[in-house]
Length: 472
Ligand code: ADP
Ligand code: ADP
Ligand code: MG
Image: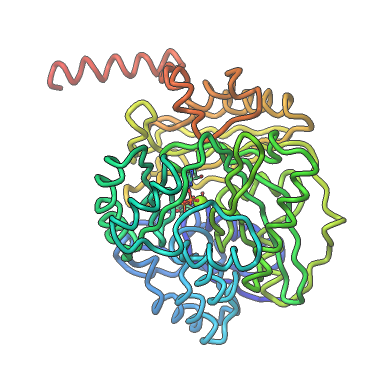
């Protein structure tokens, strides 16, 4: 087993990994920038190394990270999610330095990282993929003729896209003409690659993804699904496991396809195969994320498996110590991504100082966070500052517990998605348990909540308004 792992990430993600290291008796090494000197992951790791002054580029400095791992005698590196987690060159450089990379091989990252390449590999493996273009689009004319053939609406998507960016829906020819160049430019700016492809737009789809786990000895299992249909701007907000939309038969069939997808690229370690499922329960492969996923805690809650510990053991060469038949689903879980953003203002990020912080607790409640009173959320990163995961034996009891935990949660100083979640969790639309990706658009009333739920919040808001008016 490894002795020392470098965690190439920050925030709640780094803390999550450090926790599993500690339970396995492995030392953890954190990296941080000057601005992150007061970040929690720095305090929780056994050792922390300053990597550089730039708040973003430093965490992406492959050369420096490999040097630190070598100098400190780390025998493995965990990339987490975001940052370098889907960078095949990073995985390659780590491995060439004689250090284990806790993730799949560089070639599997490359095969799945480009969505057009992934589609080709999946078609070859007999996995149903969303109907669309063969590879990247060569011209607007090609896009127009393909769309005419498939029928509108269609989606333009960046081949190298991620994080919900570089995706545009086109409802007719006019919109396709308008969006074609815009999407290419956006893709180039965000991902350094202007390749764009087309997919048929699946109307009112369910985003259902399967967690897979494969060891270096040819065993590959799935740990059931997560339903991530509650989104804003094609990005996940609330995820549940299992999906209330699947029955056991479809679950088994999709799970088998997810394992086949992973095996087709000789996948090793943890990964996620994302599907779209339509109202008639047809399903299509959308993409594979070759890393740990933000929403992994709900899978941990319903399967009892520590996914990060499993990742580490697999990377150390150990065989999985359970089979597909050993895996069972226990109850239900919901994850709420607590983002420092204002849902009432188009989910605009709200970085700033946390003035008060009380996290919920009790049976079936888990918080993965990185903030504390006095902590200043920096503007440079993802706006997610904590994740609340609740578990319950049945769906209705899980929703009740979610309402209870959300009510206990108290974050002041910056606006967050918490009041929206309190409102959603109490709604019939949510407690019904079945939703598609248009959930928030279809329920605009859910955004019509009172952002100030406590008397002192109202008093503070009134005082701030008077002060602003008086020019104080
Ligand atoms: P998907 O690619 O399907 O959206 P996830 O929902 O798991 O998958 O999101 C990964 C996203 O998490 C990244 O694109 C990034 O925006 C965000 N992220 C990256 N690093 C961190 C981190 N350290 N803490 C929290 N969020 C992060
Ligand atoms: P990312 O890499 O940014 O996670 P995905 O390809 O996983 O991108 O798509 C993100 C989200 O965009 C999906 O969960 C879904 O809501 C929407 N989406 C993507 N492709 C389609 C499609 N062909 N039809 C309908 N919705 C789609
Ligand atoms: Mg995705």
